[in-house]
Length: 485
Image (cartoon, rainbow, N blue to C red):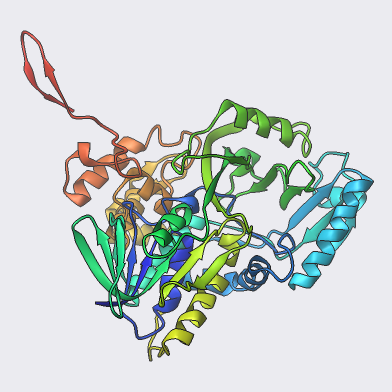
């Protein structure tokens, strides 16, 4: 019997599990896939928003502004890359400048610090690569960039170090309410918990409906992005947003925390919650819209494109509450943008809800620190020499684009929330993140996974369940028959 079962190991589930690990509780974190951060957390803008966008007095507005302020210390504690590079909402005409004033006033009501409206000359001085059509901009210095999947992985590792149990490949198929606890089923298997926290992302409505009357629907919304080579990385110094209009918010552009450049997203309502493919339509939309920010944009430097799914609800606000139907069942649903930015505040809000249901007692000792994977390339020559003396694997480069060593890859596999897939290694140690997108290093990563996990190479997945890199098949002819991998 667990005190708390958290369903979903994306940024929200991992943040809540880490926050609750500060208390004397038996907690289990459940994830239907084979790794944490395998859903929306691995495919988004990677922005810590300032908080001027959400309507005042909404949960989004409150948690965004509060959450934003928590990231500096949080990322230091967890050794996660984070940088406050600021953001600009760019207006290209006098009509759009009126929108900047509205956003400025909204931001002040939401508690966003140091907002400032800039004139054309000030904007171009900050961002000389911007279109000369710019008429002004709203500057928010508190906005930042982060590695979202790295944060979720670090949160999960730290939560486990503080006593949380993680159960992967546990797809919740049914939930029943007993007298004073819940049974949570995965096929014939089940576990018991006194309280349930539903953080299942685009499937949060499905989980809710297993135990409660339906009262919200998750409407999946796709967003396509394009990632560019590091040679484009310093095109802009800040996060650049287009001014929102009746047609939407337009395309944003930013340098990523690892020095690449990214544009996106598109926005399209879809029926399928598994619709993650990129499209020609999305590609053309991004290409057309980025021209509004930079006429001489280097399209040829693209290295990959990807699609994320946002969990939208009709109310357009977060749902964070104990349900009226089932005591001790807490929904954390409809967490679309700015969910990443709001996540630390959302976690504290959930703790407060639980504390009102059952008084929580803090642990005497809580380890807030998490040791990061050593980044060999960032070390001094003396530090590199010492590390290689201790472990020769750090002297063997596997990923030439990002200069990632075998030692780093092995570390990513052997941790408390270790990688078991090619993309799992990529999200933790970054091989395959560079210009060739794994063309050189992926087979080497597979060899290391095979060795360290003691499995056959054909068992190694690219990412989610079923994404096999190799297929085992029978080959038969006149001269030979057998298995060929």
